[in-house]
Length: 216
Image 1 (cartoon, rainbow, N blue to C red):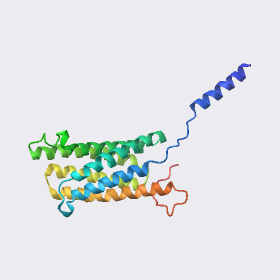
Image 2 (image 1 turned 90 degrees about the horizontal axis):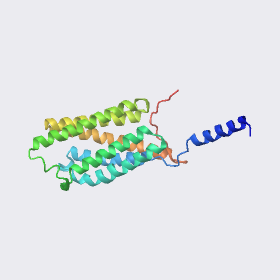
Image 3 (image 1 turned 135 degrees about the vertical axis):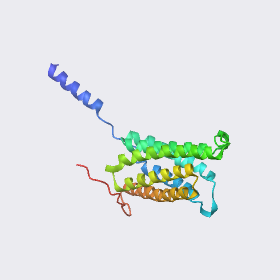
């Protein structure tokens, strides 16, 4: 075998070894978005004290299993598809909901550790402000994606900011405003999730525009 033939075999084997394998994983975005939207929708209605509801404990189950576990799985499935943004976002907010639900589980003793109500409110305020920072970073990353994603992370940033401010100021009106923006955020997430679900269908009844930006 000549050196030229050996070189060709080496080049071919190297090319095949490094060729990316096509992903057979379906788009998990709708799962993540519906899970996020539903949990946010419920908690936001509690935040605006609909029907006088002032305690968010009923959302704990949703936070742990829907907003938390389902989103975490969606994020893990996004990474093999090469979607770093989706994987990071879904995993992050899945972790957020898991941590949020854990706070309200009596067995953790987290709430019971605070004997001073004001201290607890401020601690929750810092917690929410940290997620405002994370969400604002996602907003920056979404600026070249689509109008829908800009709206989603824009409204979510405002939601976290208002909820954090409401905890620090103990101002119920500010917290209710955060809940109102949370409801808007939930509906935007529902819209994007439905748009992705319909886009995956070969014969969808309708297609929903996301206002995606064209890239050269």
